[in-house]
Length: 164
Image 1 (spheres, rainbow, N blue to C red):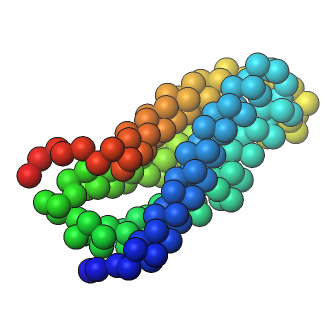
Image 2 (cartoon, rainbow, N blue to C red; image 1 turned 180 degrees about the horizontal axis):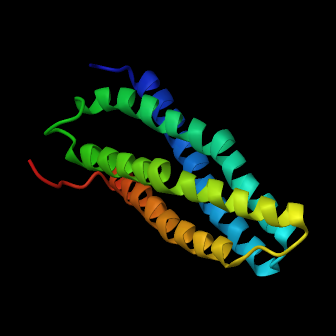
Image 3 (cartoon, rainbow, N blue to C red; image 1 turned 90 degrees about the horizontal axis):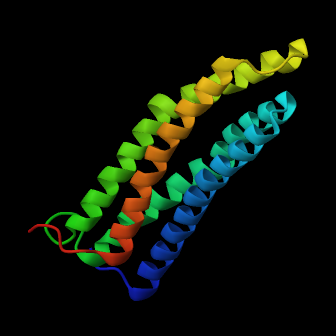
């Protein structure tokens, strides 16, 4: 599919905008949770846990759509996927793997942190060890889910020759 240079640039702009929303939110979410943990304040931990989930809805989900749809359409400029753009295939595979980690693991951990911190807020007590254990797992899996699209970003920018 041949794209006009203007159409291609619009797709690239939307794709980059999506990457900014997506990567920005996952990095800021990690920072929010790290700062909330430092306070050891139950209400702050609960609010941060809720904010991570809200941020996913407001920034991560639209970011995913803006990465995938215009990104796939922009690939027409490179002749589509396949032998002409192995860097794009690997970038997309890593992005999909990150999404699997998010959907299969991180969302469950986020819901658990919300539940545990919400129960502590309701009871007027402190979050228990289960919250911090869940947060530790969320940090580990979140690191993996952040590293994968970061490598995708590197592939998309540098477009290395990988295989033919």
